[in-house]
Image 1 (cartoon, one colour):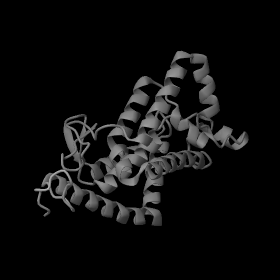
Image 2 (cartoon, helix red, strand yellow; image 1 turned 180 degrees about the horizontal axis):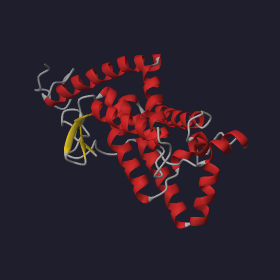
Image 3 (cartoon, one colour; image 1 turned 45 degrees about the vertical axis):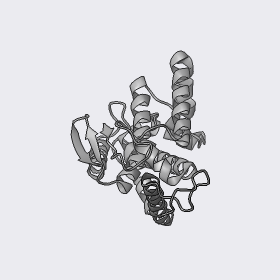
Length: 255
């Protein structure tokens, strides 16, 4: 999938993707990459890491491994698993972090990922046919948090085209609806193919509820203010408008 950004939306925009990594995303990508490299180079350690830090409802409940609700996000099963998760985090998260700031973005990321884990945990106690399997299975990957980031992106940029398979342009809001429907339908059949659809769905729900809360509403007003302020400053630079002239050019007019 690819997202194309209009050149007027960001001073960092480029022909492909949103531009350089922002601080929080850079740290998340580095942490995920480091854990993957270590687990790849030491296969025996990989198994131990998954048992200790992967999300297993049975371990969370019976052994009180509460940290698994968050640490599972830094483990991945294959190179392409971590690659596509980090690629999506970069493409859809960078602009959100620029608007929100690194602190709020990081908080949102862990809330979405933690909410995804909590959804998996709660569903493992339901009378659904796959609940027993879910209770004992181990879930790894940042997909739940990334799905939350994708929902936030669609909420603030609903008409941005996302190029599915690099070919089909779909508005972000419809893309999220499609991904949510796929996760919902797939989760009804339980975990399969190594994909935790319930976790994906949980990330979407957690992100939606958080952004619908008072914090999200107040944040939206703040974003609009900062965005308008940025646009005004950008227009001033484009048309060479200064608020008080320049010391090094006494002939420059103040507009």
